[in-house]
Image (cartoon, rainbow, N blue to C red):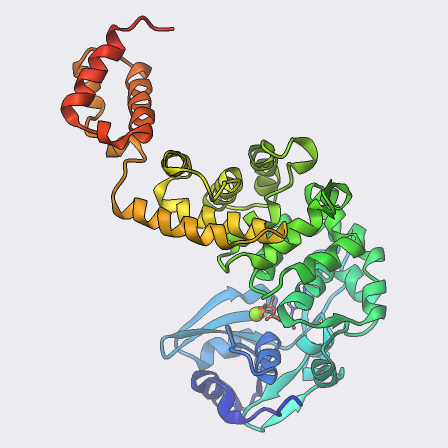
Length: 435
Ligand code: ATP
Ligand code: MG
């Protein structure tokens, strides 16, 4: 049974904002995701307030206000060191582009504002001063039943904003709910509208999906409703590719759910095998990483995010039973800073493949011992540097090549990381005829 809300569950700062609005003759409600999360007994990440006051009136009432989205009726109120979004009740204008309403207009009734929201569980508002819940679309019943249902006629709502179908898939995973069948049935007709949605908004939903305990639930919905085929053909192709008894798709979803919370690690686990249909088992990781570059750029992942995902994917195919030389080569290639993350992705992929993850835990112990003993894994850690190589007579690109050769030799035998020894090696390398 979902417990009803109590005024003291509302963050004090938010309740004070609602009280101040009330004292000035307006009304204020908490609304949307925060009300849903409170009713589910989950922690609230951000509080959204809606009000009958117009943006200009909100600005007058509070001393510190930032007009963050004033053209949509939203201002950010800074209150006792916290920032809260306060939005004037609004209806939604007509959509001609399936992306954003052509115009925004204000309304006076909370029910009208709730009517423009996407799903019934997101269309509940609570007035903490009156201790009154506004739930005109049966959101509380759907919360209790664990159902994601569009507000109003699904096809119409999805035609207004194509992102809603992806949000529906996301909520299946983050809330652990089922899609109402009539709501899901309308997804197919909304795919063309979905295809027009900006990639930034799609990216944001993908990243938010990674917060679910089992993000695969969303990706299963995306696969069966066609969202995946429209937004990521690379992943959609995996459903057709057999790996032993399973498909590369099943392995990816298993890896995704087994991966750890940082979103970029989860995405790496999900994407690890996109190269599988195009490359043999021993070579697919690098192919996957290269294939991803374009998609990640297209979907507006930052350079850091893109590099992180590609790096984790490129190096994840490791044999946890490798010998010590192999371990040091792994540290050189994966980098000390990212070795643990690569290992976590590798372990998640092994679980996705139905393999025993225990060898990865033993490998982790060995990895930590190697890190503690400061084994050299980059040219910066060599007992000589570029100046030494230059002083011996090397020029231009040759300097880097010699350092990398020395590193490779030191990785094979760490006792060679001795300054006198390496200085002599530099002389010998320079004297040797170049290939
Ligand atoms: P989360 O907790 O993951 O942030 P949320 O429900 O709070 O989920 P937000 O994107 O923060 O999602 O949106 C806040 C509220 O605004 C939603 O609960 C919903 O009422 C409304 N909303 C957001 N996006 C849309 C949309 N595309 N169409 C209709 N209503 C939306
Ligand atoms: Mg939110």
